[in-house]
Image 1 (tube, rainbow, N blue to C red):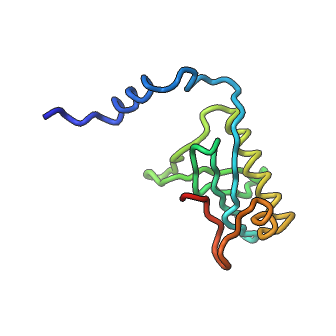
Image 2 (cartoon, rainbow, N blue to C red):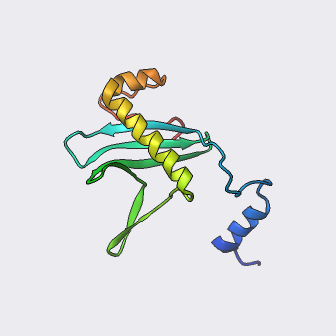
Length: 137
């Protein structure tokens, strides 16, 4: 009976079958659909969001945090010993910038218009008393 492939060999197989052009680092515009899940004005964690990238990849648990230099985006993470490690993260500086602008922009829009107005504007409504969820999640 053949041995199961390791995670590394599975990744290599996937790369071999990836469409041409996948993995290149061109400035390909990414579409970010950001949904603000919760807003906490009195906390250092100002809110949480879900992000859908190009309708193909969803990230839940993105945090909007108030730091000493203003708002920043924190990706979902886990604790490993004494430090936190991001579960997923942008690889390029350009992608990080686009993600930051999309999340902070959606958060600021939610604050200025009110959470319910933003939900209706995007054609989505959360059940009363519950945060908004991404479709299909």
